[in-house]
Picture 1 (cartoon, rainbow, N blue to C red):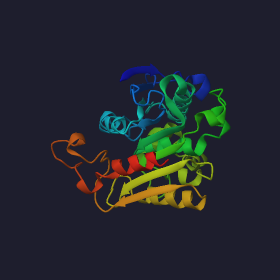
Picture 2: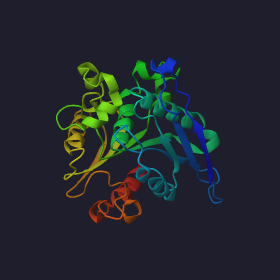
Picture 3: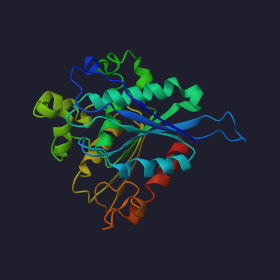
Length: 278
C-alpha cells in the first residue's frame, strides 16, 4: 500500500477570507495492484471526519479508513479547515480533493466514476454540501474547475448535520459561519435540505433515533428532499445509539463504552454492498 499526504492550496483570494489555521491536508492510502487483476480500477472513498466544524474526530478517520480499505477501496482522509476558518473554506477544500483524485485517477488506478465522499456529523454536512453545490459557480469558478470535475459520484452520510432550522446542531453552524452565523440568507444556503436536488448524487444515509446531539430530524428532512427530487437513496434509522458512533465498535470507543452499539455495527457492511452495486 502506498501512503502520502499533500496540502490543499486553497487561498484567501479564492475564498475572500484570510486563512487563520494551517492548510488542510489530504492523506492517501492507495492499495497495490494484485496479480489476478493488475488493471483493476478501484472505488475511491474520501473520508470527512466530524467535529462540529470546530475540530476533527480521529475516531471517524483512520479506523473507518481501515474498513474501506478492506473492501478494496482506495481511501483518502480529508483534514479540512475548522473554526476560526469559515464557509466556504471546507467546501472548497473538499471540492479540490475530489478534483485532484479524479485528475490522478489513471495513475492511482481509481475508477473516475466511483469517487465517493463519506462524512460523519459535521463532516456529513460537508460531504452533502458538495452533493448540493458542485454545480454552483461560487464553488467551482474560484477553483478554475469544470463543475463535473468536483462532483462526487456518491455520498455516504453518517448521522449528518443537515438543517440550520429547528432541530439544528447550533454549534456546527456557529463554527461554519462565524461572525455571519445570524445571516439568514447564508443560513438558508447551508441548510442542505433546501439545496439538494435532482443533481445530487446517490446517497447512503444512516442515523439513530436516539441521537440527542444531532437529532434524527436532520436525516429525515434530507431523505424527504432527496426522494422528492428522485435521488437514489438508501437510508437506515437505528432505534438506539448516541451521537458520534463511528463504527460503533470497541475499536472506536473510550473506556466508558458509550460508543459501542451492536445494533448499529452493520452499517459499514451495508455500505459495502451499496458500493459494490453502485
